Image (cartoon, rainbow, N blue to C red; front, side, top):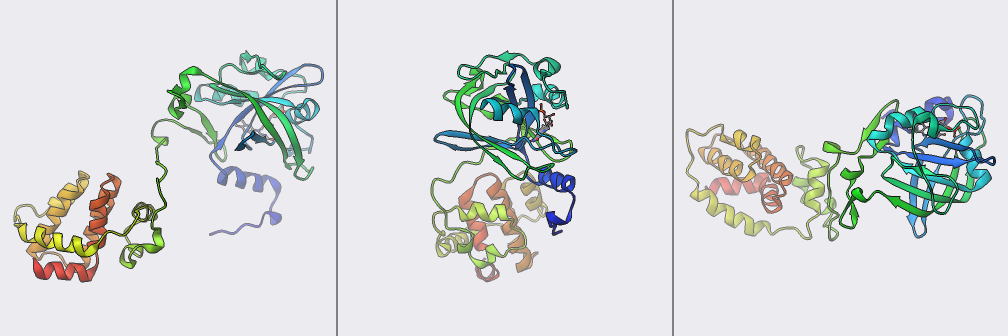
Length: 334
Ligand SMILES: Cc1cc2nc3c(=O)[nH]c(=O)nc-3n(C[C@H](O)[C@H](O)[C@H](O)COP(=O)(O)O)c2cc1C
């Protein structure tokens, strides 16, 4: 690892580091009104939500890196205590980038970027009608992280009203695919939260045994990844390997090695059929064409394939049997 002490580097470098490593970041398209009633609209990705009771968000308009002057968004929030945050969908992102330009004070970026005002119900600044998710916010606290060029201003605010497009809902829940939001990454990169970028990972219903409780030959496997181990370690208890061994001895005896199917193991794994791959492995095993180490490796590859398709029982069985001593007992019996 390259260790980097921020105190030994210029601020723009440290800024780029944060932008790259603290990612993907949600983007708040922040609308404000100044003391003279003029509208302002700018994006901020140093932004997130912090607690739901009350609903609190923080947005950070920094002091400008080039001269340390405050941004209009910061001044307007500080002076009025109000702002609206509109989430940014993929369809909006080009206009959002346009709105981020360094326009003079008093220039209305709603007009510059071609966005439509969505009147708020409790605050003066409007939201953005093109956004599927808008929040009306009132300032709770302001924390200045340094007052220097590139320092942040944490504008800690309570959300006093949400506006969510009806088409975003699936029943009473918002489906992320219906929002199609974008996030900010490092350099000029953005992320579209849709398609293959989205995946579901159900929260475990209980706490599992943990990776530390896995048998050593599984935990220290050169093949199984941290994700593989985490899936196994989500089990409530260790399966009974004696019972599995007993059943596998019977299965092994029933296998008739098929001389014509020497490549069957690889083919079945490619087809993501862990159980059929295991039967093919047992055939090769009985033919005596594999040493114990290779049998263990193949069993763990079956584990990975079974894990990928959610066949937890099979995954566990292959993992537990992938010990050289167990393989030796099975070989002797088969
Ligand atoms: C996607 C995106 C995210 C941004 N995030 C931030 C941020 O978190 N903090 C910040 O100070 N500037 C950020 N900027 C730059 C501001 O939008 C830019 O400085 C803008 O001109 C500020 O406008 P204002 O002076 O009207 O407030 C971001 C720009 C883009 C395009």
